[in-house]
Length: 198
Image 1 (tube, one colour):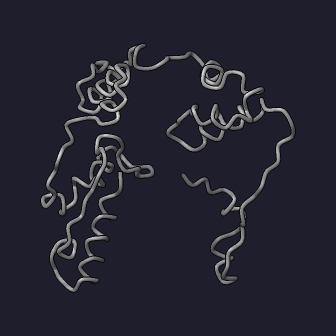
Image 2: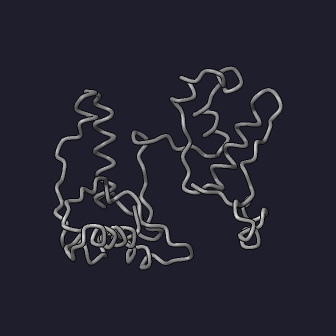
């Protein structure tokens, strides 16, 4: 979810561009998405900091008219019963109706919702079976993904899977110099190479 300051900056920009003090410069703005999915990431912040950064905490939120969709068109068009069950379980979690463990605050996912594995090795083997023979099959690869909340976890898993592939690996670095020579002091090459953008 975007930080509330991004929406507020857009508000001020539209007011400036349109020469009016009306919210969003007097234009209609459509915000689409599921606000249950993710909070803004505040490095070293608390849960209170994350909630404070939400769009709903912005002074602009009182001007928002919320319209909800009633039919999941992806499930409706596919006609797949398991996709419908999956969508229902996602809504149960998103609406805060899933049972929560009293001490840990975590929820338990049922086996018909996901496959629970005991290790990363089992996860890799179940998502990418026969990777050594199928790695050139683009369709096969596009049907698979392992998602993780942090880039360093993604990089670790990616490297482990990559090491299973035949042949030698080659690293291709992006450009790690700055355009303006005066900025080179502020952005050393080591800093540029340490960045792991999402």
